[in-house]
Amino acid sequence: MKKLIIWDFDGVIADTEKLWVSVWLETLQKEKGIILTKEEKLNLLVGIADKNKKINLEKYFPNLVLDSDFMQKIDAGEKYKGMHFMQPIAGVEDIMSDNRFAHCIATGATKEQHTWKMKQFKWIEKYMSQNDYFTVDMVKQGKPAPDIFLLAAKTKGYKPQDCIVIGDSLNDFKAANSAGIKSIAFVGAEGNNTAEYRQKCQDADVIAVCTTMQEVKEAINIFANTINR
Image 1 (tube, one colour):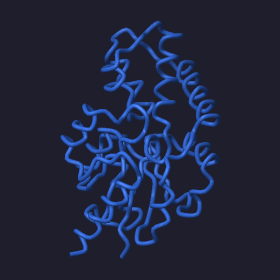
Image 2 (image 1 turned 180 degrees about the horizontal axis):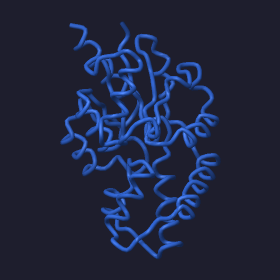
Image 3 (image 1 turned 90 degrees about the horizontal axis):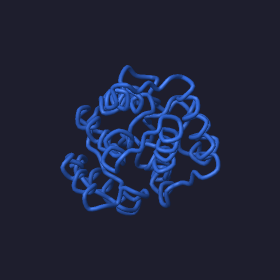
Image 4 (image 1 turned 180 degrees about the vertical axis):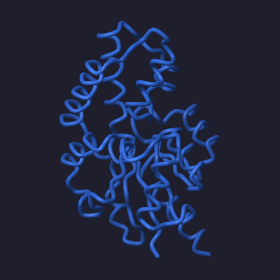
C-alpha cells in the first residue's frame, strides 16, 4: 500500500504565509492601531488558522474585539494578495508526481478560502481530487489539535504510522505529534529560514528540517525506506 503524504498548503505548497501575515499586520494597524513585535507576530499569527488568529489576539489584547467587519477586511485582503501574488514553491510538483505515495492537503484555511486558492493552482488536480482536501471547518479544532490530520488519515484509509506531514509551522508539528504522525519541517518559505526557527522545528521532534523541496524529497525517501523494513 502506498504511504500517505499530508501536505499543509500555506508556506509549503505555496509561499503564502508572508502574504497572510502582512494582511493581518496591515489591517490591525489601520483598523485598531496595533503594531505587533516580531515575537508577537510569530506567536499570534504565523502558521495559525484565521479563526484561531482572532482568538489569540482577543486573548492577548483583553479589550480588543475583532468583529465580522474586521474579519471581512481580512478575507478580502488575503484573497486579493493571494490572487495577485501567490506562487508555488519550487519542486513541489516533483514530489506530488511520485506515484509511490498518495497525497492530500490538510490546511488551516476554510473550504471557501481553499477553493479560490485551488483555482490559482489548477495543476494540483493531476495528483489530487477535491475529496483529498481537508479544511479547518471540517473539524472541531484546528491545529495544533490533531483533528485535521487524523481526519485526513482516516478518510484516506491510513494508519497514522503510515503517513507523514509536510508542514512549515510549529502548530503543524504539534498537531502531527499528537496524531502519532511523523513530520518534516519545510523552512524554505520567506521568513522561516532562520537559525532560531530551525532550532524550534528541531525541538518539535520533526524527522528533518528542509530548506528546499529536494531536501524534503530525500527525507521522504528515508522515511519510506525505514517503515518498509
